[in-house]
Structures are given as structure tokens and as C-alpha cells.
Length: 70
Figure 1: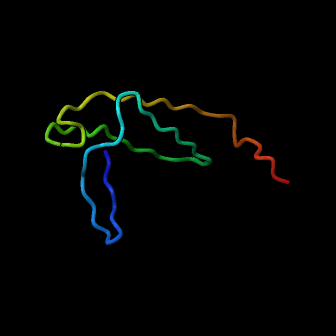
Figure 2 (figure 1 turned 180 degrees about the horizontal axis):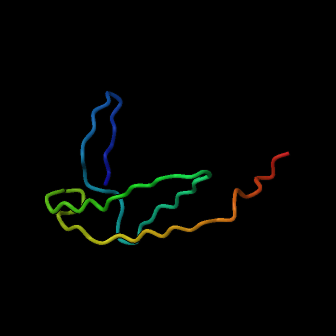
């Protein structure tokens, strides 16, 4: 879902920018609660009025990697 925020603070639901196969990688460096939705409403133009399944993969790392700082 793409909801642009204008300089005056106004927002609108417009056609999405993603396409099938698009993905987002997120990295959490502390405990986090993530909530997501695939816009399942059949009356929402952001999904072309055709909600489809999504896949969410959660990986747990071994900790924060060394960033090379001294």
C-alpha cells in the first residue's frame, strides 16, 4: 500500500508502487513487534481490488554484527 504524505500533512491512498515478487528486508537490532497487512479489503484500490497472499520470513541472527568501529 502506498500512502504518500504531502508537505502540508495531507495523505491519500493511491496505486501501489510494488509488483509481484517485490520484497522488503528489515533488520531489528533490538526486540521488536512487527505488524503487517496485505490490504485484504476487496474494496481497496491499493491492491487492484484483488487481495493476494503474502509471505513473511522471520530469521533470527546470532546478534549484532561487528560494524568495524574502534
